[in-house]
Length: 108
Image (cartoon, rainbow, N blue to C red; front, top):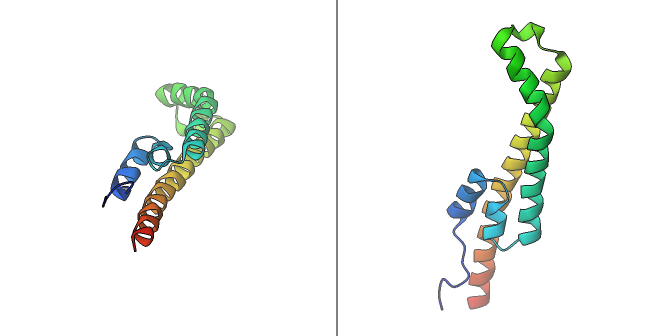
């Protein structure tokens, strides 16, 4: 049957935008999806305390008064989250297209 097993790359991207790892789950890459999902959760847990300190200082003081180590941690965790999300989005799109290409080649 035509279309069976095919993936929608836009949907894989949308799912990964919503939460990194969901696009991989949609594509049938369960271990990769769970790993990305867990990695994002770990980074968010680790960033919680520095982010709370940052927000506490941001409400009452100027940026110069915030400890440099806190700024570094918040920036690092933010960049890590963006990097993981970007890789997840890219991978979900490429993998969905590859799945579709493989299906088309098998039908020929």
